[in-house]
Length: 521
Image (tube, rainbow, N blue to C red; front, side, top):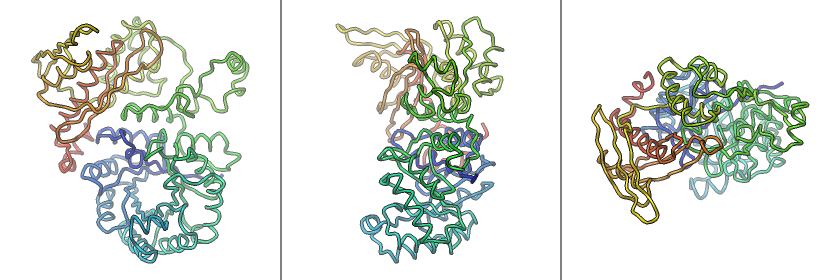
């Protein structure tokens, strides 16, 4: 079987998805999870796009040891130089440069002739090769490019030293049959492709990204570019978990396999959801809440007789646990630790103690604590930032005949501060009271409230996004069986992130000097 490399661009293309931005610590945490999952390449970011992106690429390059770490760069001198500065500390650095090759892009976006594009592609590939031997060239909008011209560019950049050629379906335009034919024909017209890694990068505008990626594998591609949960520009990218499990489940058909540890898939998906606050739909393939759920009686009966009747892959193969042992308020720390281990988590004694205390508090409020409740608690501890403010107490008065008021008491440096505010409802009043304590006027960009599990005593899961006066956005998350308390905790969490960024000097232009401090915390 041929080996298919998995090129994960969650931290670059995926993060460009609206609402999916991550801070430095979260990017490093996600990169380490991708490394544990054994993806082949992590595209850490677009180094020249901002000081923040440069710092995160550099941090990931030095933190990750078992994967190739790549930075994206336009086919331009400054981009390539900056990309190299960011990735040169990696165990296996890669420069990934691109330029558009379709007539539409060359005329309207680049305003360059085909000859100018060719010359630029070759010259900039040679410059990148001068820095490192692992160079990937992407022909942006390749699937809408002229065959003859695309083949000419490919031959030119391979001669200049490119070791991977990526042929993206940048706008998700092709269909699987077209994509297969595209790869077969371009291999015929550019014979030098047989000497390098051939890569596919598909977007999901027509819902065909995964199907097109698999068609490319059938046609000879040996690398697939994708993201966790399929996040990315517009409708997203090809979903990594779907590609990996399709190749795993139908390996005899594709005669291909990856090196990904599939048992880490659910953990990776959940981590990304917890960091970005963007959930996957319940019926999402592989990682959706209902992907391995059976409600219909016929299905339940079939699965009880033989799992293969309605399951083409096992829950265990993607990291789900079948254990139905119920944890409650009488459970001890040992049982809690064992359940965490079965879910794939290994925490320090300090983090375990904090998570256990949160679990005991929750168990006093709920009849049943589910695995998803526990994962939510652990995820909150996993990417926790220092708590500048902590909630001491709150009192809410609200009704359809009175103006909502909130009395919020927060603790900072062991000193309690209480403020009262009115608002258009209890949540608005509470948030305004917090702003008074913090002494900042903040804009609420997004607010979501949901439940981790089902039932009247379900754990409320609140997510907020706030924007400060500098236009920077910060996300926060709060968990409680009381949805108002969960909302208040989420807002405080976002405020603490904002204050932490300011205190550590993590704003644009200052990140480069302080990322190492965060990395080793």
